[in-house]
Amino acid sequence: MNNQIREVLREHARLPVDVDSLSDGDDLYQAGMTSHASVNVMLALEDVFDLEFPDAMLKRSSFESIGAIEAVLTELGAEAAA
Amino acid sequence: MSGDETFLAAVRRIADDVAAAQAGDVDRDARFPQESIDALREERALSAFVPAELGGGGVSFAAVAEACFELGRRCGASAMVFAMHQIQVVTMVRHLDPGSWFESYLREVAEEQRLIASVTSEVGTGGDMGRSVAAVTADGEERTFEKQAPTVSYGNHADALFTTLRRDPDAEGGDQVIVLTTKEQNELEQTGTWDPLGMRGTCSPGFVVRARFAPEQVLGTPFPTVSAESMVPVSHVLWSHLWLGIATDAFDRARAFVRASAKQKPGAPLPAAARLSHLMSELSLLRAEVSTGLRDFLDASEGDRARLNTMAAALRFNNLKIAASEQAPRVCQGAMGVGGIVAFKNDTPFSVGRHLRDTMSAVLMVANERIHQTNANLLLIAKEV
Image (cartoon, rainbow over all chains, first blue to last red; front, top):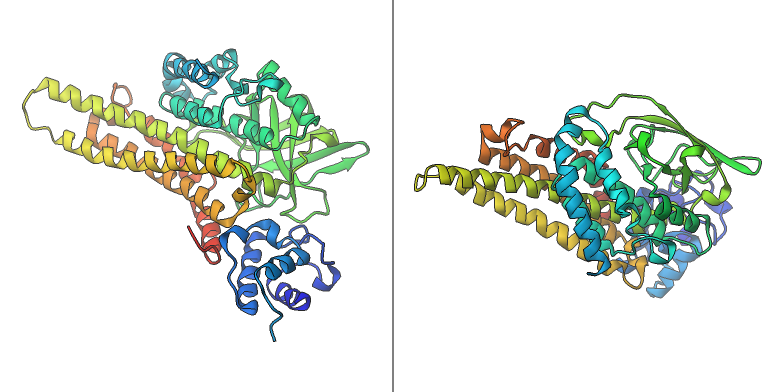
């Protein structure tokens, strides 16, 4: 799952740094992810993991790090896509 | 009387006796509404929202919103200066760390009735408040910044400035903090003139702002959280209340015109009366959006305030701003339609030119098109609106 999240970030987060250089706890917004890019990340995650984020989870803190995204996806019962 | 009632009685008196008397003059000369602000200081209204244990009035947020409405009915510029100051105070109170520098500054706001302005817009960001160019820069034990601001409302009249900046010179544009600096620490170099269509008394030219300050004057909570949980929704609620106040006075003037006409020719057909009825529907739409906006903010602020961090909340309070800023000038224009030439002239009891011009600034205060861009993006992912 962690690798798939990183793949989504590589494609959609438009970070000025290499995703592989980030640890799971690093703040993605501080790393340069804009609010605009974060929406594209969310859309891609919904697509890849075949789920929908409920409104209560659609907030900055849910997507602020790779670890946070992993926790949200796990809570929603996501499984690593084939 | 409760604290809220005492406060509101004082604000209403100031609105009627002081703000109304100077509104025309303030507008004509594009000058700061000094008399209103002095009177508000005298009633300790600048610290109305500061908790009582810090020496403030301890009034409710709803009372502050109501005060913006009351001042807006009499002088849009006085109301806007008051509202903007309260945005900074409410933000500080909501994100206060006990024992922090900000706690001692709020005591000072109460004791000295300090007036706080904000420096949030910046040249080179395309109107995006969520990004900064200027940064907090270390200089030994001290910190400095230099920010090019296209507008700073009442910058020349403020005792302190609330400024958004990048956390440090290496931080990304969205990695922002907010800093409060005092008059003694600030140096303002005016870069433009101020001769706008409306809200002329807010005195909001551009400035290069430079400051030297202590590290503890950086608010502990990062700006993105402060913005989502307080600054944006509070701004939109307070602004919309004062726009409603201006529109309500325009409606009242249109009604006074219709009554005067009816008394002049009793029984004669009165087309303006029907127009007034149409106008009442428009005003009630505005009032409904403003009052549900306030209620939604109060609901979301109870308990888990993190709810305000959701995209659904951002959409809700963005929409309040867009709807109110478009509807308020519509009501004022309608009032001009009711009164005709008598309302168009600047020197009759039914004049609404200032009301129309003042409310036309609303769509520009954080440009609606910029907010629509944000909303359009959020709507791609948010589920309920």
